[in-house]
Each structure stands twice: as C-alpha cells, then as structure tokens.
Image (cartoon, rainbow, N blue to C red; front, side, top):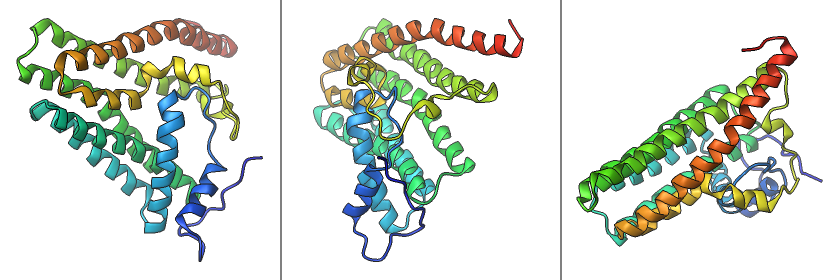
Length: 261
C-alpha cells in the first residue's frame, strides 16, 4: 500500500526530518520510464533535501531557485574556468546538488499539499534553460581549452539540438495526450509500483544525472569528450527510435478525433 501524505505547511509537532523522509518515501509518484540515476539516486537524495526544506519552512519556489543557482554556477565554471580535475569535482558537485534540488521542489510541494501552476511553470522554465545551457557551456569551455580541432565542437552543438528536441517533444507529447483525453505518462505511473529496472538502465544515456557525473572527467579533455560523446550518441539513438513511436501515437489520437495530417 502507498501512503497518502497529509498536506501541511509545517511539520507536525515532534516530527523529525527522518520521519518526514519516511513519509515521503511511502508516497512517491510512480517511476515508470525514469532512467536509473534519476530513479535510484537523485530521487532519494531529493527526498532528504525536501524534508530538510520542509522543516526549514522553505517554499517549493525557493528550492527551485536554489537548484538554479547551483546548476548555473556549475555551468559557468564549465564555460569560464580552466578545466582541471579540481574544477571537474566542483562542477560535478554543483550539478548533482542542483539536480537533487530539482527533484526536491516537487516532493516538497507534495508535502505541502500539491504544486501550483506558477510553481510548475518556474520549474520547467529553469529546466528548459538548463537543457540547452549545459551543452553550450561545454562548447565554450572546450573552445577555450584550445586542445581540440574545431570539428570536435560540433559534438556539444549537436548534443544541444538532440537534447532540446527530446525535452520539447516529451513535454508536447504529454500536453497532446491530455488535450485529447488520452492517459498521460504521469497518469500511467502507479504510486508504489516497481517498473522494470532493465528499462531504467537502458535509457541511462538520456539521464541528466549521468551527464552531471561525466563532468568529473573535465580535467582530462580527451576522456571527458569520449564519455560525453557516448552520451550524445546514446541520446540520439534513443530519440531516433522514439520519434516514429511518438508520431504513430499522435496520429492515433488524431484518428480518434477524426482529424488527420
């Protein structure tokens, strides 16, 4: 059985952070389709951060703001600082924390009784900027090292196109499903279910959390570029496989409404 959270602006008297974490753990949204890092690492870290924020009286928007500060500070370091092993560790720490806070804002909203349209908008606005900024900052950072032939800079440029396309279509798919009365991915997710671990591992190249970890290699440009390039290839492959399936799904929605294109 999945627990039901009792909405509250502040913790109950005597409730510890650990108790709040356990309440959240018993009322998690479904993990269907979630990549491995996001599912098994980022969400549990975000749960702890959400509980801490709840006990400190922070709002979900404040947590989203902290996530943005950590993320874009890390990306600024990628673009403007010398690429050393220490830089890589710093960037990875900032991006991992920023991503965990990105998970925490939604979990905090559930603790407080649910999110608002404005809060969801802010969360997606930050995510939209992050999706493209990470690759543009990699491009700038690699250019500034002077270690690579210009052709290699096409890798982050291409990755940016793929990432933005994937992110945009994922949101559009959900919007069109809702508009046409179909079950959204969120509606298909059953709280407390345990989706396939294998699928979570197979979609790992699309996981922003895995991308965050790759930055620990920033001090060795060829090694970093190889790992980053593998993620680019994996994400591109996933997108190419998903596009026909998504197109067919949207065509089916049109046929249900008697519209075709």
